[in-house]
Image (cartoon, rainbow, N blue to C red; front, side, top):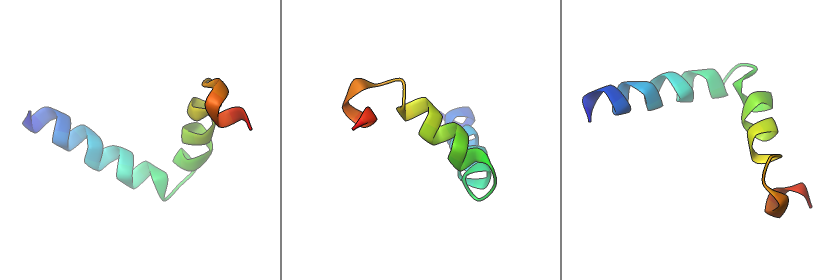
Length: 35
C-alpha cells in the first residue's frame, strides 16, 4: 500500500502543475463528466 500512497503523493504534486489538464482530460473519458 505504501507504493500506492507514494503514487498519490506524486499525483497531488502534478495537480499543482499541468497535471490538472491531464486530470480533466482523464475525467473527459467518462460521459458523466462531459456535461
